[in-house]
Image (tube, rainbow, N blue to C red; front, side, top):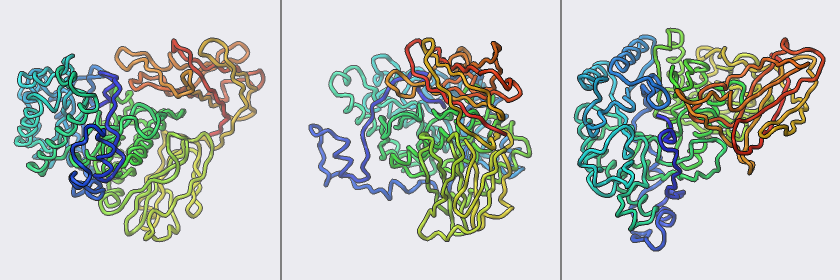
Length: 614
């Protein structure tokens, strides 16, 4: 599911929790006047307890969101579609792909059924056929819940004494909502549901009376404590339940340019209740890339790093980074650049590996490649460890994820910069054997990465994977990603961009003797902060190419520009990027380049030009 800004882009202020001990939690969470328990009296909990997964092994989850989309598209969820995707799971199994869970995502429910009835006519006979088919094919079924936000669901009679003043959400700490909601979860567990996805949580929710009597922070604390303790009891009663947290449980996921530490801080005590916390739906980062999908890789990588820095073990972070599909939620991506998307998701080390979308897009060749990635990381996730290294993705610094076990290691690396860069592949553990001779297992097309010892040189915006030890064998080769092509050379072009019209910059350059022109620009607000434009997603939004525009002309004639970002982007975008092919401009005569924004308020635009050869 997408971030909650698509039904209510509200800011949230959550608890500030950095500590990993009960003493620090008491100091940081509870304001001095409201402390009722001393550090010595508070319940004991340790980092080791929080870091240990509930799961016995990593799991692979299919979630059907993005095969349908009822938020930024008009493709409804139906029983027919759900059963079709189950059939695809069975088909993919023949080629070695395995899934452990199948999660029915949002809007399966009757709006007036209190999460107990399924929506008609989309599900004329309810979920029994789907649940039975999952179980007969070795899949554990799961379900999505909007938690306490009333998104396409009405308050049941027993919830109404928990309603907020605007009737948009429900309090966990007062009234009948939480007891009934836990009864709902038990009802579905008893019917065979084993994974529960909680989305759109709103801890500011309070009845009008409580809103007058307590501070916002006190309301948040009361709601968080009530819900967390209820989930812990549910886990204890139902040990096979897998609980996953999505929007509202902390972290700032709108942008890779936001401040860190998070403004909406992740309370690490949620690790006592949830198997994983998600780190944002796939969307473009604030790093301009001519390949739109590579910018999305950088987003998910960046969020994994930030949640790790916030104290979450990598095993407990679900980046939901693998989403294919034909709907607006995934920008009608289909399977463009899907290989790096899957490989990076596995490389990040999360134990909840979630795959979204239209599985019918994976033909036999793609399915066998998918299965090979699963086999590569199966042991590395379950028996080994994954560690991060290098820079922060959103800061445009080369970085990577390294996974090792007793037999070898695999490093997945990305260079987000507009230059050729080298990156050290560090020793991941003191007990790790020296790397020795490595092998490049996977790369983008175009520039050939150069591996020398423990250093790799990558082209601009390039991704690669390298194996050492047992994994430096040809049997682990994953080939070349043909639909992401990296230039062989890149060099900056001196371009003196100047303001021309409001929210427009312009530069004139001489045409290069060889190569294509690459143009990038970044949008900032009047204070210099990176700023996204939000023209809306499908079906009624505007295409981003009409808001953030690149234009070029030579000798009075417009030049064609290849761009990939001209899409309906529900999550907003802060940049534009495109290329002018050498065949499309003359050898003489200045080329005028204009970058502009359709924002109504003043913005600052930064332009850059490069010459690239392929």
